[in-house]
Length: 573
Image (cartoon, rainbow, N blue to C red):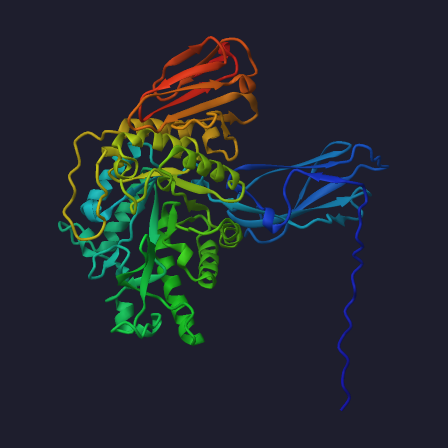
């Protein structure tokens, strides 16, 4: 029997062509140097050719990209516009969230033939719009009454300027009564339900979702992917889904955490075995846990909100890759907020692959000014690729009083978190009231009674309004320290986009005991030797200084946000 030869493929003609000298691109290229933008943001991409090169014909260029295609995946062609003989510009407004790539192609013969750009494709991660300026209020369900009580509290939360609410997990509680130890992943615990209605838990939750949507509040649902309760339905009905541990009486491995005393175990949590040796059982586990994520993501999607990945650094990378692909495919408008503590290289690689929109920052770990200053510098240094969410404290940490020694530390700490970072911030329930001790989110408890007046509510509302009114505080990289390494004060200038001598001076005194004095020379920034005026955004006062080298005295736990226009005659409020 004769053997048929395979078809010999045609080798395409792909010469390595550099047709017109050096090409300067306004955008980075390659996966490891990706860029970021928010949906709805306008991109201006510029290609500049060497001025010395002369052409017989006008060079034409196209952008070949998956950006703004109908499905976010198909390649489309967007023409560049010739500004002059050596500059081409492409302007487009981003319409599809997700990871996209693009490249340029050139024509030297007025479009008869095209030459592909010789560099790597450019990559850009488009975040859904709610990522920009996130102001997140974390609600502790076990001390907040029923879902109907949560609904009634939404207006107060909105009045403080928050545009999103994070709920700790609502799933049925296991015997430890921790929201992070689920008995069943697909049911709301009865403790959260109103008793004066016949509506089931999910109908009550839908009413809460509708109320949040009516107030333009986005909801963030907390997902626990790594473990379940030791007496959960999974552990009882499908113990083979749990990582085995022959040292445990029930043969199930417990989750663990690191403390000052080394590794410690949570006796109430067992670890899901995403690496199960049986391919069939592994597929069951992955499918079930993916359904869990999608089950709660649909409520986040209804408000254009978020899902929060708890303890992502301990998760199975292969499963997370599959999970995020499914989420982005079915609910592209849902953002991902990740509790993800790992090294910078891993953040860069996995953040891009998984489409992580915001990573949790931990400013409460930096009690003293020198370390906090370095942390803020880090947040801005990596902000080109990694977006951070920076609350004052977390539900796992202590209160500002416990973390920083004085409840009034809330003032400089919230200003720093909101106005010295990159614009995504928030608080934990109770911070606005100035409570001294951390709220215990474990256990079934009666509704907590807070003071009639929230100590910091008006202040928080004012800071949130500044964050909304002035986009400079939501930009990345426009952070110029001017405090000369002061031991108690952090001061930084935030430039207004496109205005070289205009911007905002943010000054925070973190000393909980004493007033602090600082001299700040703004002459290199404001480019003037004469008197300067500014508008203090927290108090509404106009301040005048005889020269740009200004003297400030801040009481303990105080902050100032000074708006400079560049010229005293152009002061605006």
